[in-house]
Amino acid sequence: GALVLAASLQATGTARPLVALVTPGVSGQSRRALRLAGWALVDVELVGRAGADTPHARSFLSKVWLWALPADAAVYLDTDVLVLDSLDALFRQGGAALAAVPDSQPHASGGEPMVQGGLLALRPCARRFA
Image (cartoon, rainbow, N blue to C red; front, top):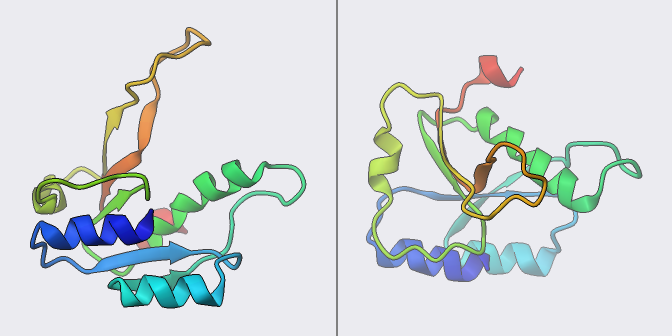
């Protein structure tokens, strides 16, 4: 997924750096492949409680590390995204600290629509992260 995502981003001609948050479970071989594909790697710890939270939940919660990135703006994409056009405009989303879209999947619970966490535009901020 991450290799195809890198290729699709590069095909748009973006000048933005590709940064991957990687957790301790990512193997050395996978890290090498990510670097060769153009990713700069940022090591992060899993968030949540081992044994209490599911691996999926811990991975999802680890997105909070995005706010610790040393950047003025960031766009987060899940690795199952195929980018067909430039996303550079998302780096200029105005003063919003976070921009997201509603989840397009129906909700069996009948509750309020949720945010689609696979595409986020945000302004990292060490103060918010702390």
